[in-house]
Image (cartoon, rainbow, N blue to C red; front, side, top):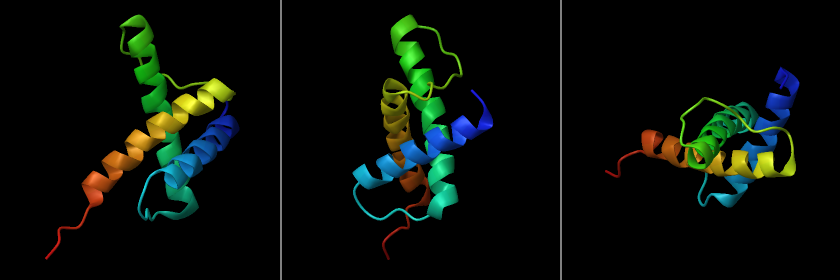
Length: 90
């Protein structure tokens, strides 16, 4: 998949994941794209692992099932990002 398709998939997946995930997430458009692309890799790799049992670094295609997998992966990425950047209550 070419870089433009990765950016489009990342934007779509990141935007949907940020809309679904409760609370406020910062980062702007670049953060959304980056988390979406990371989520696409996470979701694609987990999907392949669950279906074949082998762990490979892969991402879904730019299709409806690919977007669903990428959104699920982006939700995981947003959750992990919030865990890493959470400020402790004082």
